[in-house]
Amino acid sequence: MRQTSSDPRLTAADASVFLNTLTPKFYVALTGTSSLISGLILIFEWWYFRKYGTSFIEQVSVSHLRPLLGGVESSSTTGLFSSVNGEAEPRPSVSECKVWRNPLNLFRGAEYSRYTWVTGKEPLTYYDMNLSAQDHQTFFTGDTQQIKAEDTVMQKAWRERNPQARIRAAYQAIEMNHECAAAYVLLAEEEATTITEAERLFKQALRSAGKDINLLVYIKRRLAMCARKLGRIKEAVKMMRDLMKEFPLLGMLNIHENLLEALLELQAYADVQAVLAKYDDISLPKSATICYTSALLKARAVSEKFSPEAASRRGLSTAEMNAVEAIHRAVEFNPHVPKYLLEMKSLILPPEHILKRGDSEAVAYAFFHLQHWKRAEGALNLLHCTWEGTFRIIPYPLEKGHLFYPYPGCTETADRELLPSFHEVSVYPKKELPFFILFTAGLCSFTAMLAMLTHQFPELMGVFVKAFFSTLFTPLGFFADKMESFMPSSFWHQLTRI
Image (cartoon, rainbow, N blue to C red):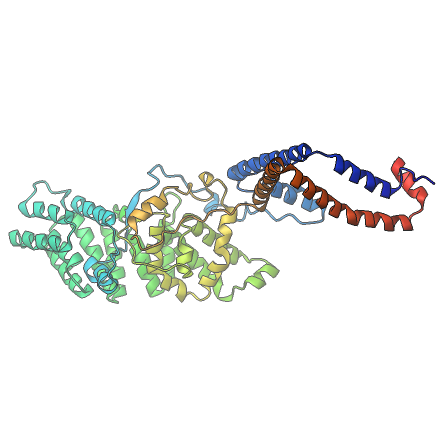
């Protein structure tokens, strides 16, 4: 009896006959069309990722398909990580890559030179030292009405690249005038090989400074830093507080950052909080010291008993949530700091100038504050568990910002000028490409390669395709035979009619 069209074996045979009749041109058209479609999907996915920071396919699957499959949508983080006091950080009008004087910069003779003696490497770049020379010329001679002979010598001294030439010029200025305070400052910075000797020279400079405000502020600040380095921390704190009271309008010098570090060394956390209450204000410029010190205080309150496993089971308490938000805020301001605090990246001596939100600022902060994070039990563990979550809540592209103004794109170039060549400059963490972009790129490349091979080798590719489909349809034919043995023939007839 002749088999009817409802027989699945006949259908498989027809499919085999159909495949045998296809020409290589059909396979070229098929693979070429597939490559074109996957290429268009790739272009759209890439555009969507560049604009919104996520994969369109992934977003649709999470937003629409997961609820249909019984999944639970993740809660929005918009409310959890809103800005402090419910307000967004103002966007400054200053240049994105403004370089600032490092408030805690080291002494060249007593500290930087020691590093050079031991390692043979120069910790400071010429660009950094040139900025310092410009600062000193402006700071120490800007208010002078009549330029004296020793002032002219000191102006040239600051510009000298050779340290010995600068020191010789300072002694020349002292020979002209034994009361040349700027010369004693240079000797304290560069010739003194110990902090004690530097302190002695700064005291001599203070006696010779007269009423020059710039010199007085600079010298008193360095004397306070000498006291801090020599272990007289309470004396250093008093000197810094007196300096801030005496010259309240010189806030741009960031003397409060020196004060915060000294208070942390005393573990006077209530006093640290009082300083933050004054300077961590939405109307004032931020720094890594301000943001990370605020995060440290909040982390310290909960870090000792914090456990990621327990937090995932019961959720975060209010205090823990405040600490996590503070860490996210600090990481958004400067994303380079955590790797230094967690010792995932080696530290170097900080430069004399820093770029806010850049790697240079991260090095300067971690160099002085790593010990304070280590002292707070569990604080580094909390930072380790939470800091990477910041990058999931920062809008993309970065021009939109989140709690702060947009992350400047020129930090890497400026940091390479400020940091020595042997240091690997940290770059802002890049978002990884979503899986579907990589998948469509691979699919587009694969189908394009098949189209090219089919066009170049039609006979060989035809044999390959026929063998591939024959292998593919063999299990289907076997499955159809088994189904026929279990199902009545009338069932297949009804099924083909439908």
